[in-house]
Image (cartoon, rainbow, N blue to C red; front, side):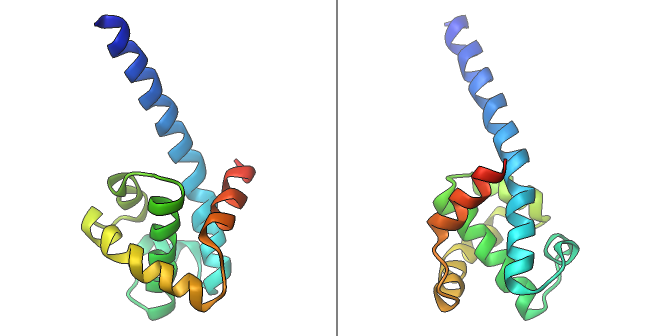
Length: 112
């Protein structure tokens, strides 16, 4: 039982490291894509392009990277519910720009 607990702790630590490394790259990529500043994405701005960038980032992080909404919410300074609400909208915004979320996710992972 203790071995199982230690293995789970190590897996969680690895997951946290992956989250910590992937999210900043994703924020940077979405800021460039939507023509906003990274600080705006993290600052809770409600300007339309910023909200769209945040929603697109949520979609990629949750759906394509499989990150927990709570972790994404912590990185963005919003609630987990806001992240989950943004997922479907974000996929739509990415489609409008003819961007593939899976390709963007792979691009961000390669950077890490």
